[in-house]
Amino acid sequence: MIPRAIKRLFHQASIGDQSYRFMFERGAADEVVAIDCETTGLNVRTAEIISIAAIKIRGNRILTSERFEEVVRPDAGMQADTIKVHRLRRADVAQGHPIWKLLPRFLHFVGGRPLVGYYVDFDIAMLDKFILPFLEIELPNPRIEVSQLYYERKYGDAPQNTSIDLSFVSILKDLDIPPLGQHDAFNDALMTAMMYVALRDKKVRGSRIPRLRTHTVFDPTGG
Image (tube, rainbow, N blue to C red; front, side):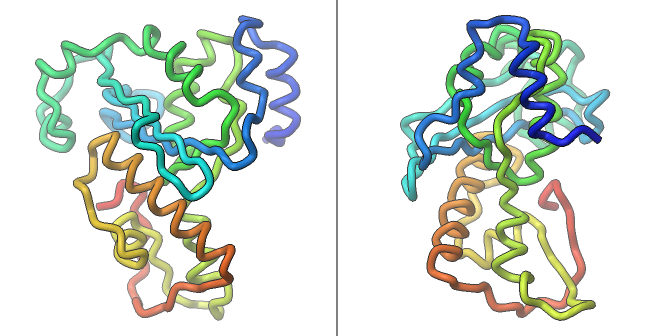
């Protein structure tokens, strides 16, 4: 696997549209963007994006007024189980825009800021599926995985054979963050942003999360 730093240099030299070179500019040191993509499945090759949300975070402030939130009209129709999970009707999705029309605004919104997410590699892989043919590069943004931040605060000093639970619901509970209803891109991005701010604060203060649970669970869908 090519290291991300080397891949970033390659993409910087090979970007198809020079007007998007701003994606390689880091921007303000204290700014990141929490993202979430709702999809029709968990297989990157076959799934489609049906909604995207992104929220800027500056320092310890979540800027909900500075957000990107769009419903995407996928190439394939939505199945009944997808409608049930995401609570998006076919009529809602039909009013959305094709992903290629939304990408320019999304990319200008996030710029070169680090992207924060839960199971963020999946979200970025889904986006890259469309960005690669558009710009001939993948997203070069640094990534921040909230489950890794949580692991460090709760299990970083744990003895071997400690049962580990990195589920979305468990992170919310340990951080006293109210559940807003998952499988909604904006809600998930907002909860992820709150996780990031809380975990970052704990790291700065050197505070750890007590280990009270015994179940071994890791469900990236939060179920």
